[in-house]
Length: 202
Image 1: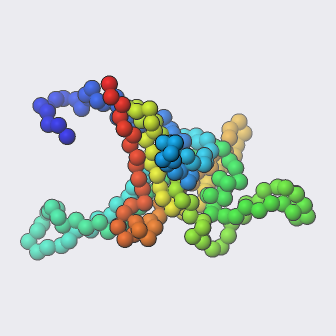
Image 2 (image 1 turned 90 degrees about the vertical axis):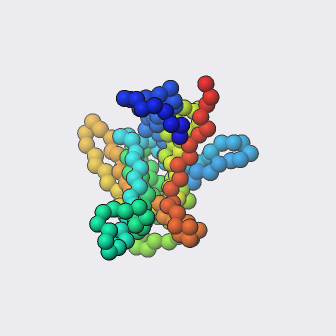
Image 3 (image 1 turned 90 degrees about the horizontal axis):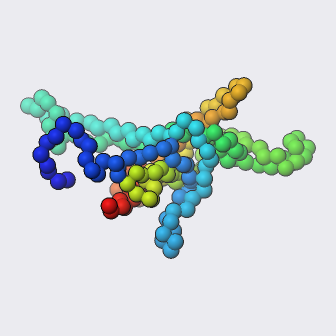
């Protein structure tokens, strides 16, 4: 950071380059294709009311005789978590399956209509239920490229909620939480990444 004389506003010529604008889009299993130089992923669906990202961190203070205030070096990270709350308006079987960590099957023509898609919950959780990642892809005002927030190894751990009413559409609300893999556990790393684009030069 370049030191400068103090002013009465934080606005500068660089300020308009650093806004995150609009609601963005949700993807799962996002990957960077080095050959094409682009990100590729599976769209989760249209949203309404935006999405929010939350990082919670809990610290404990090392208690030392004679220290009666918060002191540098005495805080230890005790736990951390990262999640997204999303409001999905495009309701599909995959959306509901993701919200309840359920299964999808096809109607058999006897107990259910043939060809229908049936989503059911299940009583056990398997490693294959974790989604590789979920990404919120937004627009960064200082670049033609997106700003991307990625949660790794994602589960919907709060169930889902939606209501229906006349003259309106249902919005499925769920909390998606990231989970550390073995490597991230070893490194004590949060299963969250924020990818900032290279800023354009004026």
